[in-house]
Amino acid sequence: MQVTNLRLKNFRNYADLTLALSSGINIFLGANAQGKTNILEAICYASLGRSHRTHQDSDLIRFSEPAGILQLAFSRRDVPSRIDIQLPRKGRRKLLLNGQSIRPKDLVGSLNTVLFSPEDLFLIKGAPTGRRHFLDSEISQASPAYYHELLTFGRLLQQRNTLLKRIREHHAAPALLAPWDPQLAASAAKITKKRQEAVKKLHMLANLMQRKISGSKENLSLTYEIHGLEEVTENLETWYNKKLEERHELDILRGVTSIGPHRDDLAIAVNGIDLRAYGSQGQQRTGALALKLAELEFLRSETGEYPILLSRREALLAFLQREHIQTIITATDAAYFPREDFGTVYHVEDGNVTRA
Image 1 (cartoon, rainbow, N blue to C red):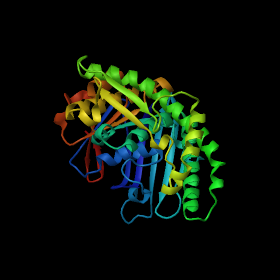
Image 2: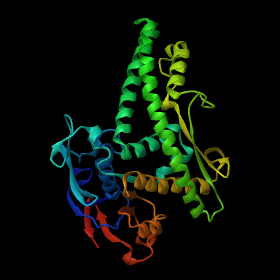
Image 3: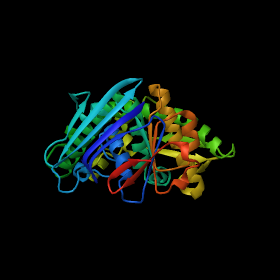
Image 4: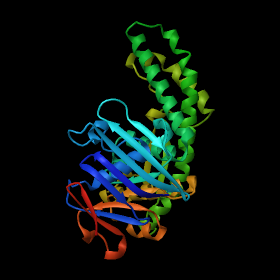
């Protein structure tokens, strides 16, 4: 998988940028706040249909402009494709894949990317939401069916929560909950099973990476934790059904659904020690790096080719060059890189990009 060309018009601080990318390592150098990360953001947006920095598409449009345009040409298994995204300040965005209008859910999986940034430390020490998002993003890129199931679960969850609030406020009868439980349980079981399968694979890959990074001194383990379940003793769908029914009174009181994959977590340990609670800063950093390297290998094993890596860290360089993974890296100083011919270098200044 390779991005060949990128065009940005009125996107962030770029008035009109046309950029050809090399198939290897692409290094964007420049001072802070010049537009380097905006290039990563654009490619990430084309991959997932959302920004990793903001929830508002209007934030992506250049100041005072009515709309922004993102065009990206890429090849997948040597087949050329193109993504076009129109971002109006008012109204709905428009997504096109090879000239055909598509829905946002059909975009995910077309262009696979892995983003590695300083914020990845929060994968280790942050809230469970970030770890669930990590799993969902990775699995969704490999499995459009999983992404569609996530959307189904999210819709069912929102509708059930709305009903819970109405019951709490005496605007609906508690008996109306009964039809929702089996639907939610079936969807929850599908998501949980897929996450469990992915974590088993990630566990092996991440441990291999951790041992390489630590010189075989550390073992990294990943465990999927189902909220409210200590041991699997029955069919997951049956268990979810039972728990949802048992928690009717509690859920009505709180106005939210208290059981389901939206409450689960990913436990990460090094040599049997909880990395989030007791790991050193160095161990947390290497753990995050091992997870990201494992993500690259996971997507390769699931799709047959490496995704594109969008990186703000230089620690990956040797691995990336050896494995021939197209990579886009941003940095403020050329001294981060071991030699001049390491990759294709671009200089970024005030929304202008020039090739060195």
